[in-house]
Image (cartoon, one colour):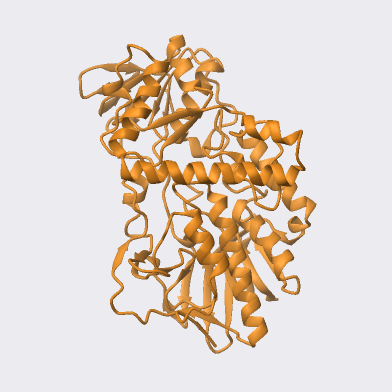
Length: 482
């Protein structure tokens, strides 16, 4: 039997649980269900279980605006984040709306009925089930959960040790006393390397093709701890949250306008941590700050591990895997018992769900994104996609609130559908993300395009999105209501 809901939410991670909260608070008469492929709430924070997994954004902005983060650390571990999301869902009864082990495979819009038909596979036997809804809200993240990205490495079959991707970390992996090589220099690598070194690995080498910008921050936020004893919890949280938002926006702004000065300052800070180290080779990127995401490490843990001698950085290209490690193009060899391929994610659009509109296949790469959350000519469909230069949840909260504004406007005026339409022929298409990171470039044929004018432009700026999504009218002349 097909069940009908006013809203179907796909995904029970940070975005999906946030969507459930906003619907309950702002659209209390709307029915909703959350379809989750996995067996637990948490999304990314339930999937990734590698050593040391933590946020690379502070929890005062990665946490929800409506529920203060009360943990001790601003840079929190994965278990704490998962527990926070789970507790949020439990306290507000959102978890009662979650259908676990429901993998959404397709969604078809019918203008005749003004409904989406959502098809999913349920349980271990993959039973086919259907739901219908008036509005479809995709909160399933931006990467493929089934597999991460791993390049083809020459000679990989020769290596006699274990090769592990962090996205599927074996629970029983024993690396005590082992030599480990971690391939990569992004957020995952800079987390794994000191964690494995401090937890018993004999030695860990971070092998990178090129350096990444890295900044260290205290794991605990001093202002947050000071205010907790003086102010009500929600007020203290809001103050620290806005402090972090403004600092983040300023850092991104100044990085884009004075990249050389910012780069020099970041490298000078590392020099203070690692005097005499070859920073030009190992810590000086070839690109400007925020052309790719800046890596955040708490309490200088990576630098401390390097100074201890437990960790080394190798900046080189791989020639081949060997029986006992990796041979580099420079001729050097890195001995290894375990190789970890922290080589990134495989990006997908709309959770990989097959979308049709009145029988016509929808390809996100061939359309424009409206307010970075909806799509040209696609009715009653929104997608939650967080910031690449700030915390994911900042944008997710705004997106969820805007969806509720749309739903309330439609209900008030008797509309059954809302569709972004492009009437301005002068709007030029641009790449959706202005990032040079490999995982973004690999997804150029997957992600939608943005326009060079609002509301088709992707801001990547919380203040501009706050103005656009919270204060501007939903009846903007671009969104067509019927």
